[in-house]
Amino acid sequence: MSSTTSHGVKQRAPSSNWLALQKNLPPASSESTSALTARDRRKIARTSESSRTTDRTSLSASFPRGHVPEPSTSAVDGFKNGESLPALRQMVSGKLEYSSIQQNPGKYLALDCEMVGVGPEGKESSLARVSLVNYNGAVQLDVFVRQRERVVDYRTQYSGVRASDMIHARPFAEVQKQVAGLLEDRILVGHAIHNDLKVLLLSHPRQMIRDTQVCAFKHKLTRSNRIALRHLVQQELGITIQDGEHSSVTDARATMAVYRIHRKEWENTNKPDAPAFTKRPVHKRKRSEPAGEQSVAAVAVTNVEFPGGGKKGISSGLSTVVRHRETNTTEKKWWKELGSGSRDR
Image (tube, rainbow, N blue to C red; front, side, top):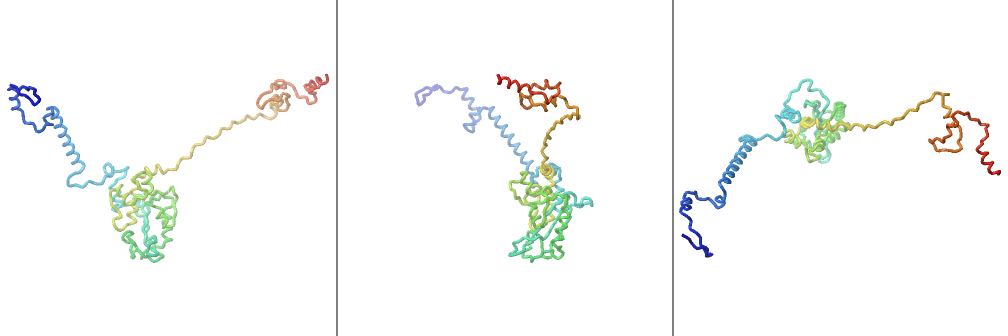
């Protein structure tokens, strides 16, 4: 049995076996699926199943349900560069207890100051509070400074200083002298420390200063060369400070905590360069001859004027002649007579 197409070409009718096979085949869902082989369909099914399993596993591991993930600190077991982050957080919050040894000043001191507003409209800053803590966060000094001018703005929302704090405040000269005594021969740690030294009217050797603002930018911890302390502490410790009234003690402890995390790296790069090795010039010693034992040849060469001249350092060839003969100053110069005799003829 045959049929004719639109182009006039005869097409054979399908056989009974083909018709029976089509009845047993499942209907195709789409043209693209019917075009795929069975092997391709199995491969696609396995790939999609494995991808769904991977997505479920990664999602459950990175974000546990019902739990907010802690800030990433790139640390293992709460440690970063050998420092315990939980211990540093407790130090900043003032929850640590110190032994008598841990309360000693030690080698490192962190400094922070708070200001109040004086002058017209309170725009000029005046030192109001000074805090110093050691390497462990133990307070070495925390005093309020008596104001010599009328305070226009205490800036309590930022400085945390109030008028009642000035009752037991100490004179500026006394505080300045005490701070200078504590900082002597010690490494000073601070954040934008030049501002604190400026209001204290003090200076400190440059090689003894560790400014966390400068070091963080120098070692590419941040892109900003004037990063705020609260942002740096949030980045390195994952805690929030200066949320409301500031505390110079908390800020000094936070600065010391940031320094302790990167102390080894910063100290290695802060070492002074070793002086370049310069090779000493080698001077050969001339062997001194005993007096009176100078060779006859040397005396003859230096004292006798050779007619042939000769360049310096080059023998004229006559030293062998005068080596075994004594110089006679009365002897006639026979070579001069040779020239005069030829002219007479």
